Image (cartoon, rainbow, N blue to C red; front, side):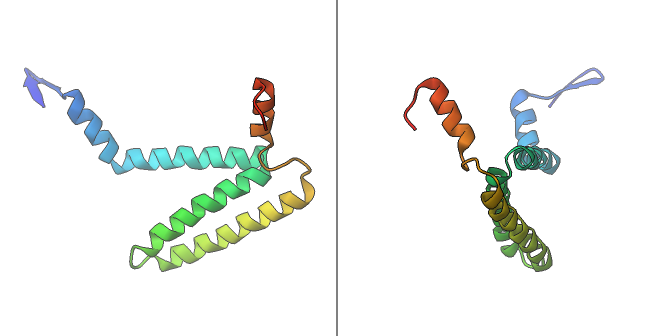
Length: 113
């Protein structure tokens, strides 16, 4: 950081490094991923439930590696079971295939399915 008079100038390299390592920045990124996962569940529960189950599985593994967070991991395991139940229900009652958005996009471009 360079000080000129009463202003401070931060170099771009230092500014970028601070953002990536900042816990608040990482929390915002996780929040964006979770909002997108929620929208996918709302629009296509069959696919969205799989996305949420994988996301929760990663969270559970992370929590099990940190001593003292086993209760939160157990809670997230319950949420994982709920996501799997939603996926099974959506499989039963949703006639669309799981990856229908991808197949639809491939057929528009003339790609083989």
